[in-house]
Length: 111
Image (cartoon, rainbow, N blue to C red):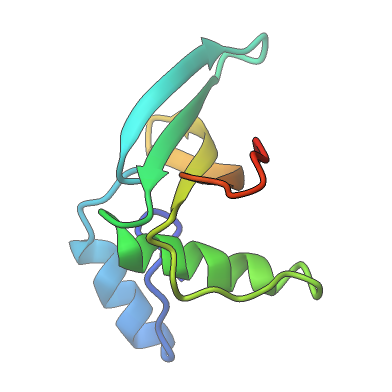
C-alpha cells in the first residue's frame, strides 16, 4: 500500500514501480491545522470531502478495517468528511490517524 495515496497493489514489483512514479506526498484535501512538536516534526490535520476524493476515502476505510473488526465497511463515502492526522517530515505527510464525520447527521451527532 502506498502510504501517501493509499493505492494498494498485489505485487511488490508493482508497488516499487508505483512508489517511483507517485507524486502524492500527503492526503488530498485541505490542510486545516499545523503544529510544530517538541520533537521538531509537524503535526497536520487535513479535511477531506468523501465526495470529492472518493477513492482515497474508500481506501482509508479499507485500511482501517484491517485494525478494527467492528468497523463497518462503507463504500458510500460521499456523505462524510474525513479528518486525517499526519506527521510531516522531509519525505511527506505520514498518516498517524483519522476520524470521519457525517456532513448532515439526522440525529445531530457531532462525530
